[in-house]
Length: 110
Image (cartoon, rainbow, N blue to C red):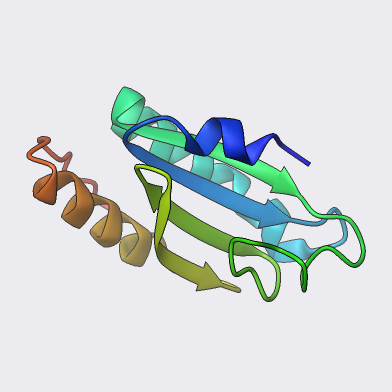
């Protein structure tokens, strides 16, 4: 598993993808990750956390299924998605958090 406590100790926005190798939707998220990284650059940190069998119920981040995306701000979870999610929903949540922090957002056309 990724060392999430270390990653989440940094200030700012972090989008973590919780995944398993056998989950089709987890594999389909890769192009979205690449796109988000290109648009947001240093304003958003993107991480992946591979879950092993039996880890879901013990997850301290409230992950109940995969694939799951959790948006953290300053180490606290502020938004969660489980299953397939449209890119515009994720972008809206990221832009809202950046606006609250006073950081200029990027307009992305899905």
